[in-house]
Amino acid sequence: MATAIAPANIAFIKYWGMRDTHATLPYNGSISMNLDACLTTTTVLFDPNLPDDEVVLAFYGQAPQTAQGRARERVVQHLDRIRALAGIPTRARVDSTNTFPADAGIASSAAGFAALTLAAVAAAGLHLDTYELSRLARRSGSGSASRSVPTGYVEWYNGDDVGSYAESIAAPDHWHLANIVAVVDTSVKKVGSAENHRLAVTSPYFQTRLDELPARLDAVREAIAQRDIARLGPLIEVDAISMHAVCMTQVPPSFYWNAATMAVMEAVRTWREQGVQAYYTMDAGANVHVICEGHQRDEVNHLLQALPIVQFTIANNVGPGARVLDSAALVTDTN
Image 1 (cartoon, helix red, strand yellow):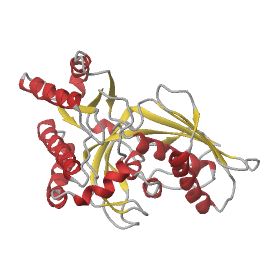
Image 2 (image 1 turned 180 degrees about the vertical axis):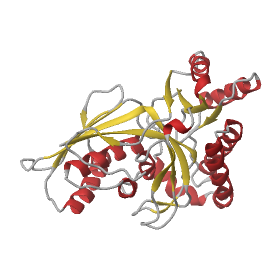
Image 3 (image 1 turned 180 degrees about the horizontal axis):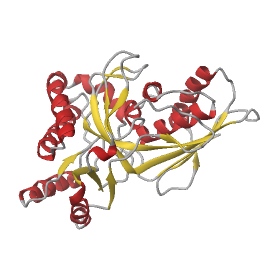
Image 4 (image 1 turned 90 degrees about the vertical axis):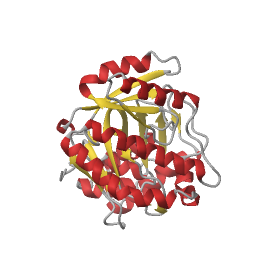
């Protein structure tokens, strides 16, 4: 048995569009930061007495439930990958909990499959380094899970099956950034990310976005290295708008934003004019991630909490990557 904990992450440069759904290979590279308050904890026990896999999920604010349908299928498929690596047929019991809403644009699948990967690998007696773990997490079908494995600020590289992996480009203490999630909608999104990754190529703006990304990736990497919020902030806002423009113009179109999303974006712009150096970004959901430097975290959090449209906030610092909590497991970190 082993237990692992993994963070959600927020992408500064988004991965959007999947060119190989079997191996989960993206059309573009991406850069993110791990979130220290948005966490999934997963325990895996391989038990020879089990006739079949058991998967119990305790989503934020909900009682534990036995997974059914596609949710269970994705977990079992990933367990099968790990069983094949370990050369074992044993069925497993999986228990998973998280500290934040699922399927709402806060990377719950990234945290969930990163935690599942590390817990199952350790429980199966495998010893994999961060490179191997990030590739394995990527193959779960949640590509962003690869970014939740390394620590701090992370880049996931576009490439073939061997070359598409994630690694840390800066430790959490390199730069104290904060991410306050303004939760405006806790409902499950109507169209999942996987379907929209498939449809992204139908947008007339998809190729334009891909053409712009190499320069933007370089600029974001440099802004992190130089701890330059004035440079980073506009880049992440542009990239978020670019990604959602693709969603809105694909066939059929998909709209993740709602009126509350737009209102938070406008509020952040207003605060910036008043001297609060904060910037917004959104993943595949209505909820808004507001990025600022650590010394302004409490101020930005209070401003967001004062907005009637915000149900609650989750204040994060840059956090470590996925790690095994069970001391019996040995996982080598190469970063």
